[in-house]
Image (cartoon, rainbow, N blue to C red; front, side, top):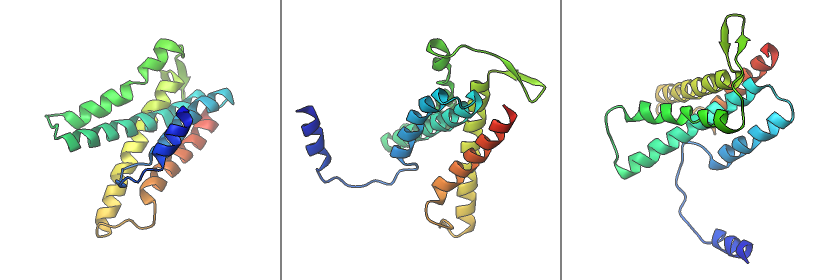
Length: 165
């Protein structure tokens, strides 16, 4: 009965609102993280995509706060930092902190290292997209450029981390 009700509610017409990122993609990444770990993908690569996901959730929180008119000093940096810091909950329950040498000099847990890298890559590619769009008269160069840039950058970083780890 519950499934029927959900199916009927899904058929109701609603207005479409443009969003900075696709929620279906975000859910797919979140579900894919667990699958990747079970398949033996290195923890740094899993952390890379988790960092991008947490940053995306922070951006969504900022959009929600903009709609509500909630503005205060340092809001954006605080929300993004808290969003990325949610990776700490992984260490409370399921993952044991295991510092290992990374690239010879830095000693850090691979999941945490990947999370920080993924967050930075997502933020930088978002800034790059805004810069490229502004230089092109406020228009994207090709359809879904906003999605393609971070995904390609994260895929390249994943490939590099697969080689390193």
